[in-house]
Length: 242
Ligand SMILES: Nc1ncnc2c1ncn2[C@@H]1O[C@H](COP(=O)(O)OP(=O)(O)OP(=O)(O)O)[C@@H](O)[C@H]1O
Image (cartoon, rainbow, N blue to C red; front, side):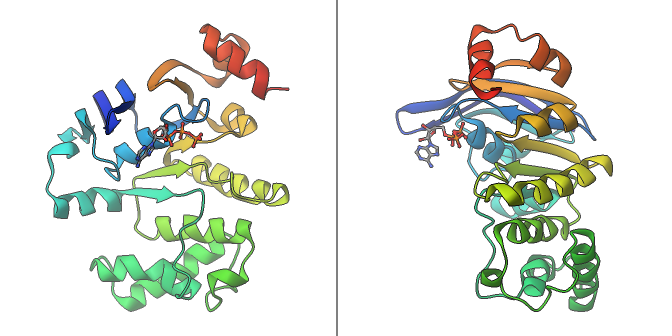
């Protein structure tokens, strides 16, 4: 589904991604872990071209999306939903409007269709009575569940999650991870940057370890956590799996 070839990304003089080759299959749940600053978010943001790669190719369904024009890039982004650490909801819009705004603006649905979709999604994320509320009235966990509903409103084929629970109070982490597990069980292709090792163990089909702009190791969760090979990964796991 997604083929990444020789991906590099620099910000000014600093090379953050130094050459990444990856293949993501339809239905896979790829979890990316690694130390702060290792390039995890940058890699994720390159996948849907929120960051423009400095070099390399990203093939989505066989087509190199790094060569597309701006308008075609919008189309790719519709097919790859993104969920951010800080929710990024529109504060001046109701929850319903947050969910329906993009599909209507992009002409994917009529207003009525989008409203019906919003209702269905609000039920799915367990917040059926929040359509007329505004984001400021919601808890962090609720905001993130709405952000997931908003991404799903575009009927994406892939969902990208950038540390979706890192900004949440501890008691709200579970409700968001539970919703992500439901999505995984429903067959969604997912790429997730997270510090939640339990989620990686339970949900991932493959776990990637990034350090210094490279994918240093990757494996099934069982092998990854029980039999790590790279010394950097061993050291990282010894610190996070206390
Ligand atoms: N827009 C930008 N301009 C300049 N430097 C950037 C930009 N985005 C990221 N960087 C730098 O790139 C490096 C990698 O950042 P990135 O956010 O990808 O790491 P990360 O592994 O996701 O870290 P964390 O776990 O702390 O979120 C960091 O040194 C960061 O400062």
